[in-house]
Image 1 (cartoon, helix red, strand yellow):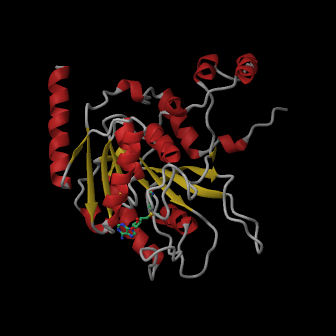
Image 2: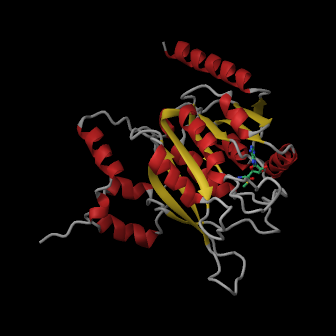
Length: 321
Ligand SMILES: C[S@@+](CC[C@H](N)C(=O)[O-])C[C@H]1O[C@@H](n2cnc3c(N)ncnc32)[C@H](O)[C@@H]1O
């Protein structure tokens, strides 16, 4: 008797299969979009909830955030009622996401005490009270971490990927990992695998090994909880497309902005600490040292950002006719 792996019968897979059957799945990849000559980037210094209120409905393709968790890591990391506060930006995030939009939230589920919030609280709220769909939980595994004596030393963080609808954009090809020559030969012999996809590389799975930034990392801008470019890049490439809008309303050093310049996505960022501007300038300096293009349109406010975007899209429509 064949034994089926029931974990494959999850909601997302069933709805994808239904869409395939109905021929309504528009599977697009980065190659289907034109990369803008110069992306627009806006970094506002203000509270995230006020910032989100200024954004139009359905206007953002990807929200990529690394929020505070009340861990007292810094002055900004303290809230009296964590989930009451998080609800405000989660509701606004759902409103501003486009129908094919995705949201990525970094977190952790350790070092808890009563006043702290964590990714479990967020997942619980999202499941019980919102229409978001939880597509994946990614385990970010790193080999470099702090030592510990009273518990097992922590070597992972979690990141959740939420979608606004079942019709979410996902470009797996953009983030496939190449097989080694030996593994490729074996994979091409494996009858269960589609040879065309095998040639493109393998699915990176939901366990990602990427080192954390240590003190002497070349990417370090000085922000205390800066995330590596590599991990943000993977999300931006897979869950948004060239010319789309990516939003990070806990910008920190602006790693998301740096990746958007590299990958041709328009970017909206906000942080309530003005040091973000200095950190972001450091990112730009590092990019220049690496010979990367740092040319972008610096936009002062959200209104101007969307007015210019509308103009750009109108131009594209006219060229297409
Ligand atoms: C974990 S850090 C983000 C780090 C970022 N991912 C990076 O790679 O540099 C969280 C950021 O959220 C900002 N922050 C905290 N509360 C905020 C609020 N209510 N509105 C806007 N930003 C806030 C903090 O100033 C901090 O820079």
